Amino acid sequence: MFTAEIISIGDELTSGALVDTNSAYLSRELTEAGITVSRHATVGDDLPAMTELFRAAFLRSELVLITGGLGPTEDDLTRQAVCEAAGVQLVRSEAAMEHIRRLFEIRRRPMPASNEIQAFFPAGAAVIDNPHGTAPGFELEVDRAPLGGAGRAKALVFPGVPAELKEMWTLSGRARALEWENELLGRRRFIETRVFRTFGAGESDVESRLPHLIARSHSPRVGITAAAGVISLRVFAEGADPQECRRQMRETEEVIRSRLGSLVYGEGDDTLASVVCARLEAGGKRLATLEWGTRGALAASVPPSVFAGGLVDSGTGPIRSLLNLSPEASLEETLRRWQAASGAEAVLAVGAFPETGELSLRESFPVPVAALLGGVYRQRPFAYGFHPSIVKPVFVSRAFDLLREMLG
Image (cartoon, rainbow, N blue to C red):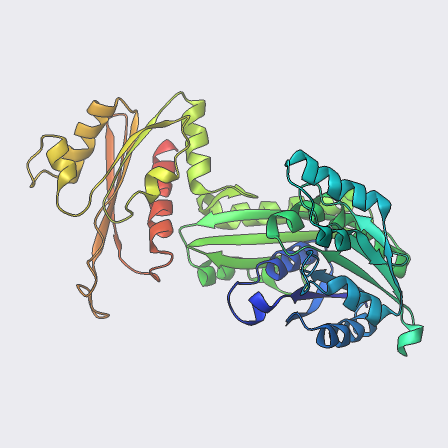
């Protein structure tokens, strides 16, 4: 069986000063590529501890992804620990050294002598280019025999800066991982992945409508995740050829769309805001916003190409005052006045949230969400809920979902 594990390096991670997002990112990428991730580990900047962990990982897993510890400071010890764990020497790459020097020249900064260590790699390693950083990564094949094992493992080592890691993974890391799997298993796999985004039903509700798809034995595999009210279905098809993958994907998509209907709003990186605003832009329409509880989050979701302006209420009534309305004016009247003032074809609004301490666990607080498209007005109340960290994005999605419904 081909398995991978991910190791993150740094005292800033083990101390809790920073959150390790790299492991989550790489796990998603590997899983979507059909590679099983068996373990995550985090270790501080301690050479003996790192060496021990790397050695165990090389013996245990066919693919070991390591992030962090490739900087120029004394506590950046990843390259040295990999050498000790694999039993090889550290050697200098002149090509990498030239790349690092060139980056400093472009930035018009002198290169400290300490940065030279970033051009050293384990003997036999292949350099993984870092287009926008001074810390190249590397790929090293590890012979397990000197470590007391059998067979081979592959280490893919990246800097810990998330943006640099993601760029390097996209450019060559994913391909290197799959090529290594193909080499060890002696076969080539064809893979296709798609993500379907849904909104308007909970995770358990969505799963209950697709019981046979979510089963682990189903092919293609379908994973379900929830984030801020959006339920995502990640479909992973694996076949002997691309045609087989496409057949699996086509059949699965038909089931998802027939069972979930309008709950499916998009694919990939689509958000409700991006889908709705794209439709507005295609129709030459602009969108204006009014918001109380979301405090600007609704307006921030609208791209400049369709944004006609937004008003945010602090809770003391300035929106109605600015629009020359009485404090008792209805939400519909407020939207219609703002549509006339902004010249927008569509207006979205999210009402006020309860103040801290105003709502007990046994009470329900309705928050109105409203939309005006042309001359048609709709308003829908939603109970205030969810954790405070996601309540704003949930209500933003609810507003765009209402407008999506009106667009038909």
